[in-house]
Length: 490
Image 1: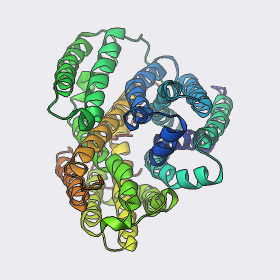
Image 2: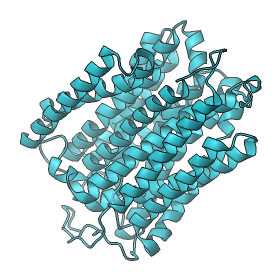
Image 3: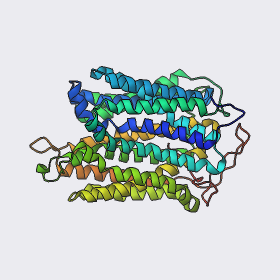
């Protein structure tokens, strides 16, 4: 690994982090449009094949904060390389899977890759000069969101030209390259927080997340009022309460509850939750909407490739907005950028909900939505980084990513229930189901705008980091480094 005395140029470090986060982001969404293909090839049922997504989601939700905490303890660069190794191993196993059970296990291993997010933000915090810190955080945050959208765009062409196994082979190759580069170039962590993992909080965190996400993912199948779903929700509530109490009493908590109660942290996390509701559900259901046969009176009969291209404008504008957010935050503050992004996203979701006559309307809507998501994600990332001490960057950003993932689970489950509430005679959803569902997602983004208003603004006292450099303070006025006014959800 890179020497501690001779630090790798931060531009090289950024390139390694960008490739690593892109590989992880692609794996979040590449599988979504081709689940029917996987179902047929592995000879399983629709309900079972959904666990190819659910298992990955559960694993990432559990391992993201754990890997961030371990990185803060023993060195971010070491854990970053190990996390990439797990992501590559899971991709290899998924590419070789011959039955759905093996595929699900592989996806659980891939979920360990969620640790790249808090670790990447922590490495940026350690290595980058103050004037480049927030722009780098914003760019990485944008890459995460862009990669998720790009995965849906690329899935169709990859499957058409090769087969669905290459949805795992290609990210595996990218991840192996990133792991080797990280081992060679990423410097050792100058900021560490000695301690140990408290396994009771880790187990309770895993238990309540599993209970909650299984209930949300299976509720459309089992019924929201079924005993199993209600029981899982009740178990999740009890386990979550127990987790909070154990974390509060733990000598070395996995998640610092004092940190999570900070106004700048919990308000930004609330915005992240609501954006997760809107974004991931839209990613899952917009392709399905445009693939609906024209005979229904509202669908476009698009192929997997064509439906993915609908999201191409979103990936482009989201990345551009992430880059522009830095300069915009210098003028209006990161809080203002989050608010602007929320309102733009709300307007775009309303367009998707009601403009169904021509495909160009959806292209326009997704392009506008990309601006909203890009602005909000980049600014929120900067806000979280600015709101916590350097040694808590990994944990704070990891939990923020977790919250957005949980929001995505909630949004997808709610969307499925709304869309399929009253199917037509042919078993396909009615247009009204999609209209109501996308309107609900727009409502979530509108509530996110209201939550953004609650994000506190003001100068916080700086504190000296372990590396000897004062950490950036939150501020609402124009800032030297972009978006220094807030806190992030990675």
